[in-house]
Length: 296
Ligand code: UTP
Image (cartoon, rainbow, N blue to C red; front, top):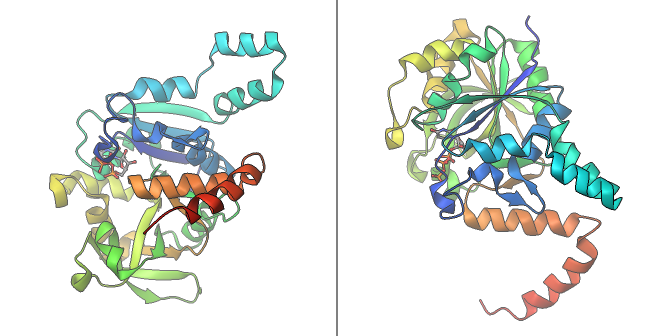
């Protein structure tokens, strides 16, 4: 079976929930403490052994390309000052992976963005990572998904148990148990269902290991919810197609930071900063005393 070496990161959405911050840069470039969200995601792909990264970009692609490119002037200035710690931080994003770019054109949905990866990916299985979800490096999810993909030759998605009151924000999965405690077979998927129509409270989060068959299905997928070509709709077709190997979900029980909307983004920054050795010791006591001053 073909091994997996490529990661696709769609970053062409309009990011309307973060306007005006996203007027001139993609939301994937918003900093989470001191790194753009997308750098955490590229680091995660590299940690899972995927060093060939394709970014699907939109109208504001320059900021992304610049972030992963050399900035000679900055390097020279830091070197001249002898500030090697900062120089190292600057070079980390430059040397991380072999990064390629493709344009989406019109942002017609996540499914459409993934379809733009077809030429680059070819006939191998590949990973898709969304910058909206940050997965803690201590809880490796992607390698577990890759392992299952290689074992089952199936499509693999990441699932998270969420509060039933939040399931309308996600794609929800109907599932059957398998012989693995953390793996379920997906029998159906519904994009952003109302609570009473949700088949379970298992939500799809932003990690996928897909087979190249998904491209043919996406070609045929009509715009769905929100007038967008939905990846979930294509996965629903694959789930019903035994010949494609079906769709399985790895149930993630580790630490995930949602950066997709404003409140969750703020929570993610506070959580991550509190845990950081360089920031936590000063931030934690301040936060405790600040909380004491807040009225509900
Ligand atoms: P979202 O629906 O969360 O992103 O897409 P959005 O549309 O940019 O956000 P809002 O709702 O307007 O604030 C999930 C992921 O899919 C990418 C986004 O960049 C994000 O990583 N995406 C979405 C694309 O690459 N192209 C699209 O056409 C839509």
